[in-house]
Length: 396
Image (cartoon, rainbow, N blue to C red; front, side, top):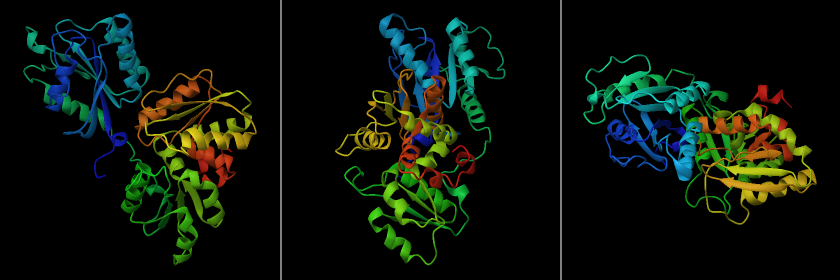
């Protein structure tokens, strides 16, 4: 529980042609035999990920990808997987064989990195094979994974571009004043993990404590008693989305109410886009395709929110019978034939990947909404749950 979750780590993707030495550079940068190294072209056949601490960067996820010039039917699939990593890469390193020079695929990737505004560096590997090593320039560094020359400089350069000094993000702390009390409603049912809290709950509690506030946790069945036991009303109540309807009937109208899912829509997604997407719920017709997508893979249980509760709520809200499709894990499919995407809160995804999924849906002209926003809309309490976020509230 004290480890930095994957979604909060800086994701660094290493890209390049086969035999440019990507895996060797990854191993040199991490100081570990993370990736298999071989003289055989195309040794890396699938993206390899490793969560670790990397000084001077801190907690990161290192991603070694297949060669961008792989060939054949399987090779094309590997290239597609490598390019798919761009959706989650906070920083990219293009590894080039310094002796061979930059090829057309390298230049195409650089153009794509520029287009997507992904911070990146070019690592000219195998500089030990050059008669004369050119001086590093802005964004282009010469190194040798074999000898270790230039590896430290690469890590320092990554630290500089990965931490531009942007505004610190908060789950909830920026909505609070030191001394506030926040009540967190956490149902314990068959879907709750045995003996632990799920990640959004953990992160919200930590953010509340770091803000100098008190977090009071209870189940929805004890909420009324918990509120009654407080000397004064809480600053805010945050609930699991599944209990929205029950909780809204208990929490007084003058107490701010929202959900973990809505907090995370703002924290690592695009709350405005997801609020706009909620309007599409009332426009669904029989047979319309609805994609219900989750960012993690988990064992489905009776009463699963994604495959059972969401569809049931949508049918009850619309009076229609849409065609539901379900995806989970790292793959997010193309959605041009869908009328709506309903996505989970994205707690296991990093900010870049969650925003990439939203952008891909918007680019296809498909509205997208997340669980919390959709459930609040279907229970008639979206306006109330958006009170802490006036910009999003103004979109209703």
